[in-house]
Image (cartoon, rainbow, N blue to C red; front, top):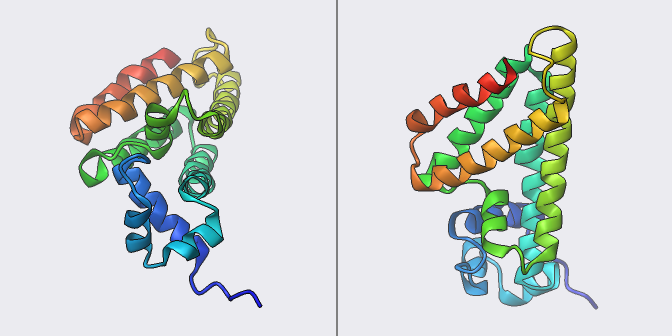
Length: 192
């Protein structure tokens, strides 16, 4: 008879996400995970298959929580410029936390790609969703005359995502929001 799982897998994935985010995939051992999660190695393997399976679950958790929250806040923003500013500054705030842990998705790409096609695919899907949401906000803002219509919304959205990715890498080098937030204002001039 199969044993009943004795831990909350969703909570375990959330805690594993935090550990991978802080330490990275390679620097996080199975032992680190089992100690951090308070579960046995057999339980980890039974629930997730292996360390890689838990890492994929952590990236998916990131996508459905923090990344999804960012998109919702963008869609709920009053004006495009203010909503994009809020999105970018919030991402800075999160990235500089814990001494500059950056962004889990960007960290994953820097550490695992090109050899890990699954990580590339997961992060690409996150970025495509962000780019599409931004493009829609920019398209609507241009129609309202809120921003200049001289740039294709998809191109402007791709620029903002690329800017954000660089900003998130920089946040690991300079984990100081006061130094990084003024850069957001410079990026927003692309909408003029």
